[in-house]
Image (tube, rainbow, N blue to C red; front, side):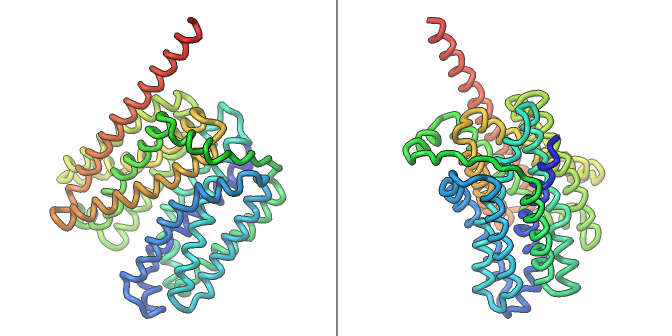
Length: 391
């Protein structure tokens, strides 16, 4: 595996850290800036919305710029947006810093995935994508605990100061070790619309949305779920998050490996089938703590195993629009997260948090059905093309 992939992985780790770290230090921010916790929560909301909207747009606007030059520029801008967070003394500049951070984060994720797929051979492409995505899943393990520790010791600005320092190192590493990769000719708007109107792409992108709607229906409310079903609090809750985060890291790597070894289509079907099964099993095993922990670990593992296969599948369907497809897929992931957390919240208000896994499982089944339809459609289209060629 090309060693530069691991530099890209570190970048995605920092991007994930910037997104997730805020959740653990919201009370500190609210107290320091003298705002309500609800208003502080807008820092999370605007990040997700900005990330989802800006990624595809910025990637399209910067299509012609050489990749090395572009990623260094974006890293510098990302660094400056976090400097703004460090020096913010009121809510408004901090909110602006989150909007800007999300914009540059969305572009960085897309660039890292795109560069990883270009600097590695076709046989290692899915694995490279999986390794890069491991950076984001690794931030799940260290994000909130890291932010809480630094924030409690030195104030909520400390985590952002550390991020700025690490970004400075990454900028130097990219300048020293990354070779030039030519940008692509910007596709005309009509061509982009035509690419996005491809039924195979629409269905594949929709699989991601449904998958993350199902996942976030439970994950967004995992803390109250664990508190209610397993009576976890404090250190035991932190340990559980660490365990699930480690499982997610292995899931991201395994998803990429399985896609290279067995093919993206088989990987997508198997992961979705097992993912839906685990969500239902979580509900069934509520009264059996040991088995429940195992089911939760498998669920977390599978939750990060699908994206490398989906990303690789999108590249194979439309290689000429691979950058924009990967960016849109990242946006769709955030859209799915927003919808899933909303649906899960409605269930908690009306019923019980224990039912969130059932809701997630049902939605995951719909994702599986869509995947089967999508892959059969691709097979049908391929057979039709073969028939025309023979004719």
